[in-house]
Image (tube, rainbow, N blue to C red; front, side, top):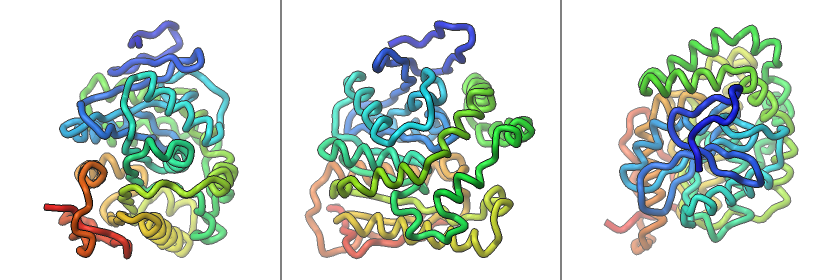
Length: 333
C-alpha cells in the first residue's frame, strides 16, 4: 500500500493510501481495531473521506473503513457507470487484500445502498449487519410517485454545463459541510469534489439507476442480519427546487415506507426517522445518530438475542422518531 501520488495530475489524499486491485489503485483508509469491521459505501458525488467524522466515532469501538469505488474520488479512473456486481466484487477483493476479516457491517448512504445490497446478495456469509443511511433500494419505483421514479431521478440530475456554472456555489456548500474537519483535510476534499473529474463522476454515477435496481431484483434476498435504517424526512431545498411540494412529500412518504419494508424483512430490524437534517447533510448534521445506529448494529451482530419477546426501546436522540418492525427484538442487558 502507498500513500503518495505517482502522477502530477493525481490529487493526493490527506490520509489513507491505496490498494492495488486488478492493476488499479483503490483508495482506502482504516481506523480503529476489532470487529465486526464497519465499511462505509458512499453516495453519488461523495468520496469516502466525506464520512471521516463518523468514521472516527466508530473507530472508538471497532475497525472502521472508508474507501472510494473505482473511478471515483482518489481511486484510479474506470468507465462509469458500473454494474452493482462489479462494485461489490471490487469491495470484496479490497477488504480481503487489506486483511480485514469478515463478517462486515455495511453502512450505505444514498446510491451506496444499491451496492451494499448487491454485496449482501453475493457474499451473504460475510455480512454481519446493515445500516441504511437514507439509501436507495432496488424496489424504489414501487414506493414512489412516477415523478420520482429512478428514471425521473436520472433525468432530474443537473448536467455538466449546469454543474460547471454551479461550481463556486458547490464549493461554498461543501466548505460549509466540512467546516469541522481539519484544515488540511477540508482543502484536499474540496479540491477533489469540485475538480473536473469529481463533477463528471457525480453525473456518470447517477445514470442507469433503473438498471442497477433491476440487477438487484433478480438476485436473492439479503441475509437475515441486524438492520437499522435511518430515514431522512427533513426539508431539502435542492430537492424542492426540482419538484412540486406534493411530489416532494410523496417522495418522503415513499422513503419512509421503503425503509419500513427493509426492516420488516429481517428478524432484527429497526427504523429511525430524522426530521432535522436532509439527505446530503445526514452524516454532517447528525453524526451522533449515525454512530449510534452503527454501534447498535455492531452490538446486535456480536451478541445473542436472549429476550425475543420484548421490543427494543426507541433511542432518545434529538430530532428522531423510531419505528420498529413487527419483528424487532430487544438486546440482552
